[in-house]
Image (tube, rainbow, N blue to C red; front, side, top):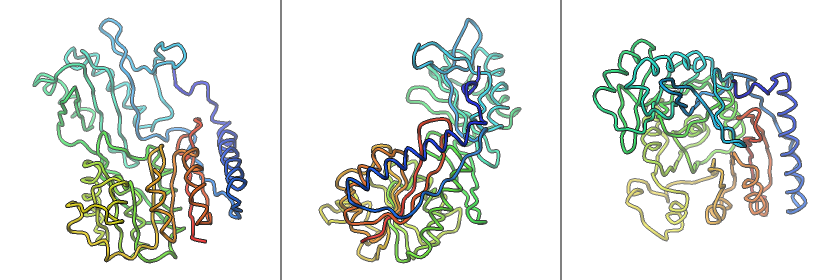
Length: 369
């Protein structure tokens, strides 16, 4: 059974319009609560109707000696068996039955395997992670190696406190932004934008709307440098922060890979950076970065679903320009109720990163009043 068997792609435009309309209502509510008049319209960016997700993960359901892909019905808690998944890329759909066949042909690979994750790129690079309720031994490597070679994929095995990497634990992605190619290593288990085509549109929108801002850029929550790299061309210097060691490692690699020389990365949370900016604390992680040398004109934030904490909102207000990308309209509006006291919204965009769901990715540019 397909997860989206009940979804008609012919209704795509209608479902996206409904999400945008809901967001417009939230903006009107914001105007009433803050007295702010938003004069700009909302740019909208659609997704491909099918085969758009570059990440997919499935539970493995065992019936006797047979393993099947499954998801859990949230209402009945019973398994929904997956034969195809048109939400995911064509490459993932083509690979799914081949991986499952290999699992079922090997007791070593099948036994206690409870989840399989696929990570794909627009260029076709593919990594598959097999996750187990058992320690992985040499016999697992022996069994999975010919599967990896036959299917032409990268494979990672995981179990509790264990990770086995056969050759590499990342895929190589290239995203095109206004005709320029940016190259990224995307590491297994780390966050990446799942909808590659919409991600390219998000990057282009952010670049286009920051061309005239100048000065230096501060970026919080930079991840693997997804936005950092293309945005760096619009600013003299960029200081980007990220708390995850894995993401920092990937960001540094991606900066070098793209030959960019005006970006510095600091491994710290947004809360810690606020303390550093206010000189409340000194951090050895900033010993090679002189904050007083930066002339920040703009801050870029792409926070998790919880949005910006109170201290970070207070710090962000100090910047002339704010680029805010959000995956949660609720926390976005909450933050805007504070930010609109000092800043005006000058650009808004809606990106359908997750079609056929209630989720909507949005982007805003705010300028000091």
